[in-house]
Image (cartoon, rainbow, N blue to C red; front, side):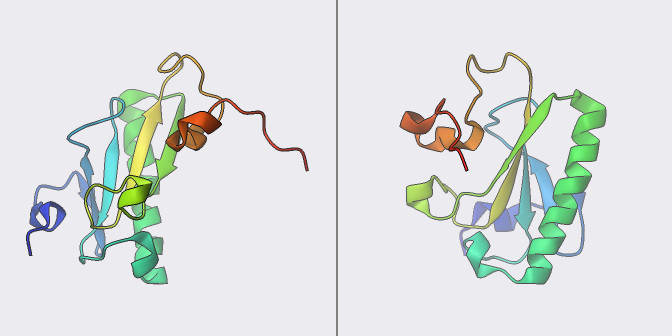
Length: 125
């Protein structure tokens, strides 16, 4: 297998099912990836136990990032499939610290994956 994530051995933090590293092409300072140790392509290909382990590590990563970088907020996201922006076909969760002023117009958050939807007012219930 020629998966770049399967070859990583230098972890920042880990548990029995997954590990975390700093993203080599970070969106912001402190951008981390939570990566499953077992090779699986997308979030929809993993077990409930693996999902729980990944989100346990998201919590650990947040504590570490809070202490080191003091961000003002976070985006936590998963890209599933190439059309959704997944560039490495091995499941991983992005933990992206956000800072006041890092973008001119943050309203919409993850809606920015479709730029035309960024900045729209939330739907009324």
